[in-house]
Amino acid sequence: MKKFLKRALAVLVAVLILASSLCFGVGAEDNTVSQKKFKSLSGLKVIFFGDSITRAKSDGRGWPARLNDMYGFRECLNEGVSGATIAGEAGNRIITPVRNCQKKHPDTDLVILHGGTNDAWQGFPLGEISEGFDVKNVDISTTAGALEYLLFHTKRMYPNAGVGFIVNFKFVGANSKLDNMQNYVDTIIAILE
Image (cartoon, rainbow, N blue to C red; front, side, top):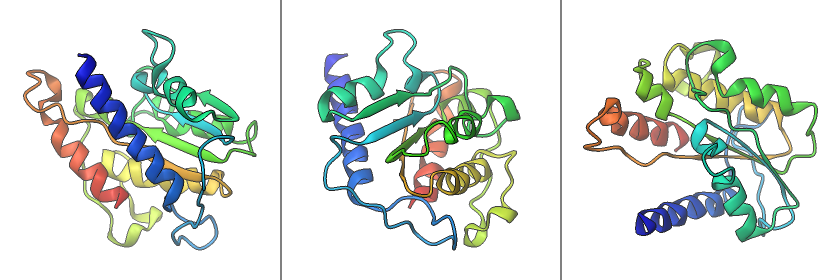
């Protein structure tokens, strides 16, 4: 288990380092790639939004606290919600806390999103990636469409922040409702690319 956690943390750190050096999301004004870049993660105000994996109810620390220990964020907020989904009912979607925190934290440097496990667990339709990333044409009843919607609106709500996404590992052979997680992971990665 320790080896798995070390490997998972290394992947997550790579995602965050990528988030600190590359562009994520779309520009608030013209739907083009954002040019937000960071030389270092230390000293940033970072908000994490996601499901119970983000919230880390079992140990109260989760990825946000562990990464804060490693990088020394100026402020690290964990807004994960157990059971949250990318698609699904309006009040349970990850975009809800993203919206709720916008006015309280306009000085956010980096927004890290995470999700998809509960979508797969609950069997939400995966859906298709939209043509041309036009938010008017996405089907938010599907995980793919709701993710495009989430990314677009997160960047619009936090125009001065970098936006990153933590991709779940694949539950291949999990012998559970998450056997089909690989399709969700592959689609999420394709949307992010």
